[in-house]
Length: 92
Image (tube, rainbow, N blue to C red; front, side, top):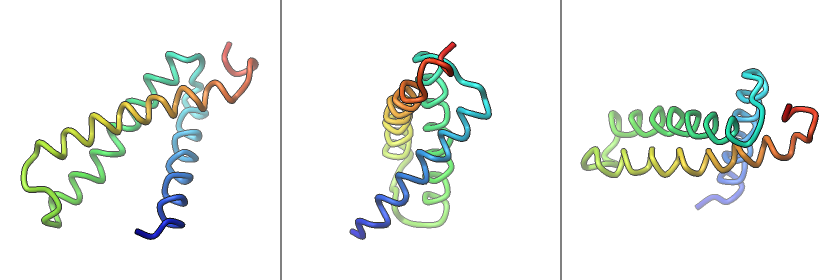
């Protein structure tokens, strides 16, 4: 594994989610959870279906769907954390 690339990838994904949430004027914990989950599902689906179509990484749809669900959960938590770190002014 190339650790600096993993770290950079995660930081860029968090930045992308932050911009997505800012542009969508997301407020509150529930908004952060919902937006993070939707973002995570779409983001993971984009990458996973691309990998499935062009590689032998997945042998069936089950692991692909599991990864999309898990990514939705992880990004929901990240979305909540982002909203909480914005401060009281943005939480309305």
